Length: 160
Image (tube, rainbow, N blue to C red; front, side, top):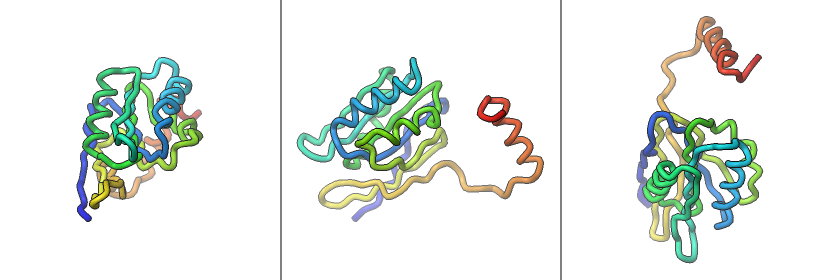
């Protein structure tokens, strides 16, 4: 077996979700989930089919993000993995609904950070064994940091 680190390619203002699913129907069901969760959402999605023709299936509402999702899916190349890239929306806006899509097995990561996907490859194919999401901690938050965190969440409307 060989390990391959694969960096997620994306603009700074784009969030992404990386997961694993089990069926070709994922592409259409994820599309419906995304547009029903955030009206007018701008996203691209790609899914690595793991049997039959083994194609990268894709969909989206934004051609640039859809093409970027395809490039990332090709680079990762892990069977039944999917990636969704979104702009002007956040993973927390769609994750609850995505977790209810019956084909989705797991979510590996939801982030806007620089991320590396750790992929393992054998003679049959590839699989995701983990992700490196962002930077390592630089310390423990102080009382001032707690105050800043709480103020920030209220400023952006996620807490009252």
